[in-house]
Image (cartoon, rainbow, N blue to C red; front, side, top):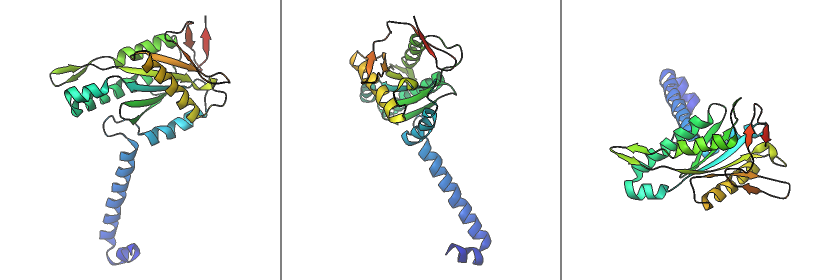
Length: 218
């Protein structure tokens, strides 16, 4: 049918196909970006993260969950909740920087890949900076709305068999531990061969991240 249309009305057919292709491209772009935060959608983030995990050295995975988000929606409304989500997304993306990818998995749940830059300080310091950024109040109209988040983090290279599902599992377990500890904090998952060990934050030893994701303790 499209061939007959092109033969009969070549100009009109070309225009119609161009509009259709543009609409299809917009649908693809829309499907890759969360409309509230502008972050990658779950599927798009997982696509990028799966590629990143193929180079596990120096790669960290973070699971981030907003604290008290339901109360924000109940008290200030969903428009305010969207503003808080967008602010958390912007702050997390700025902290991760261009060497990582941040995605919104749904609700107030985010996941990020992170490769430390050369000269980044101890993990405890970097995570404290992240939590401080995420806990800054958010302006909504004339009101300031409190914001906070809990974070679970794992170093992908220490997994017995690095893979995205295993890294996400470890980060999630660390996040659950952070939530159970009272929220507004973070936990590190260290997976030995037999399973995951959740370290308290701050860690008992100083852990620094080096140029290639190398870690050191004292």
